[in-house]
Length: 387
Image 1: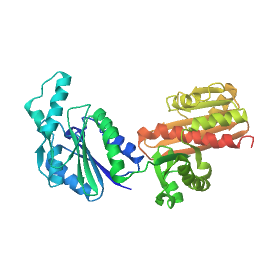
Image 2: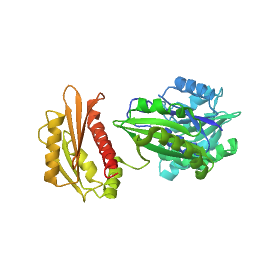
Image 3: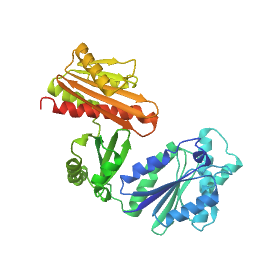
């Protein structure tokens, strides 16, 4: 299968003045056509640096796609850079100039002399029509490889990619459409490094691949399979997903679109339990998160003053559980000073349990970590209720 590198061009990208969305779109589109993306690079408007990047990319990939730098101004250097990288001269194409004239005429404008620069493309390049803009695009074939230059304007790039480039790539590389199916397992109460210790050997698989994405208080384990059909991709993923479930056990609370609050809601309904929440230091966000899924059997209270210790907090939660008249009650108190400390309490009849957690990450991540840690503690306790 061919490999691809994408080079996005524009000093404005490097300065952060605009966001690069082109490379993401190209990568997501072409991965489904049997093309592996090796690297994405951003280069400013400098012909020498762009040329060097293209030459280097051609040593690794069969397909190099550039976006941007095809305008009429002096700081649009892509044509010159591609010509240098492929050891060609720029040649003027009268047919392209006629197309540019027609396009301006359709817009009710007249081109300026610098628009003529856009009629120059690398010698021997294949012109690619741009019916939605004024910048001609082109393909330079280099034996088994090719360099494709597309506009930087996203709407133009997308149109040309689908109308002209994908058909060309299918013909040149005899591509076969593949399905890429990703399944995400959500884990809580284990950190990224701990999970990596348990499943590191699975992360070395080529197809399906296994990868980790850490969030405060939660880690996503992604399994991505490539196959000619959805059924085959699912069959590839199934044994790996089962192995992950076996190794990570109850640390996995759901998959794909499932959320902690949604899982908790299902457990409360299954066991016919009403829930109360007492919180401090979380600005009502924990309450809001749970209430979005379980409004009917839900009551809450927000403390004004933080508890001095976990035992005092447990007594407060027990008292509010009685006042709220609920079957089960969760207490969560986030205390941020020199350190970040979280008190979590669970009350269900005579069953009282508590835990103190400490967070060493960035303090602005502490509220999300606290909510995830509290919800996972609650999930595990409810799973044991009436078991």
